[in-house]
Length: 339
Image 1: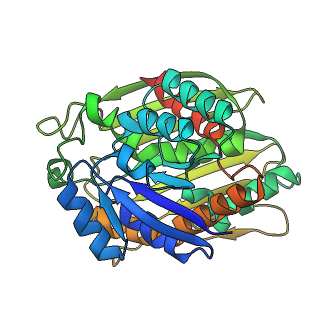
Image 2: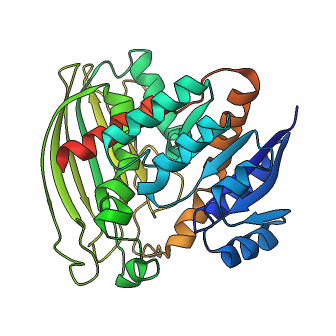
């Protein structure tokens, strides 16, 4: 059975979606859409897509089975709800939405329509991340007791000025927590379990001339299990040290997944499971760490492809996708609680 798919939004990350969809057997990318019709046409020509349209209504009128959503965060709800009402399966970029109430409406719309609704957190598909999840589930790490998220990124002012919607509450929905660290917060709660209490601080310390949202954040999270974790995030680092998620289990074993440089596949920097001890660090001053966002996105394409493939198989077989709307709500709830 062929799956006719469309792409909503033709900005930077949409290229990953086009490439990923075109790698999955049985998926045909029928069309793309963007309010800037010329951008949609250029995107379609670049990726060999037959149709480019200027509105979601036109796109959904082309007889799609599924779509992926690559728009600014605040319009995710509008598009996902419209797709559900049209009976179209949806894979939406992270974060699921910019407030928890919107996420709940999206999940409810998908449930009513009986469509498959997934959210893109492609870093869950890293073998290093899955190794940690398996070690928690099989008891080698045990119940996670302590966790840590470290997001120490560099974003130059041109990153924010390149797209008018970036760094504004009304069009971006947040700053470093909503746009960057939500990936690591998703992974943290995937490892640690359901979060129940959050306390934190946000500030704009580095990019105040260019953004109104936060570029620094610190928080503490507690979980149903009794475990706790810290979150530190910034886009103001002069040198991009990437992202790390670390967990310490009840057995005393420690495991981490480190992404350095940003966009490269994460590795288990720390792994102290008895009999399997591995300590490594990819850090090197010889590595060009302050990469352009296009290069960062390009480095994640293979894992976009794995998640898109998982989503397509979920649609075709009727099973749940690896990351559902409900799964994605959890990381948004942590970000919203910090705000």
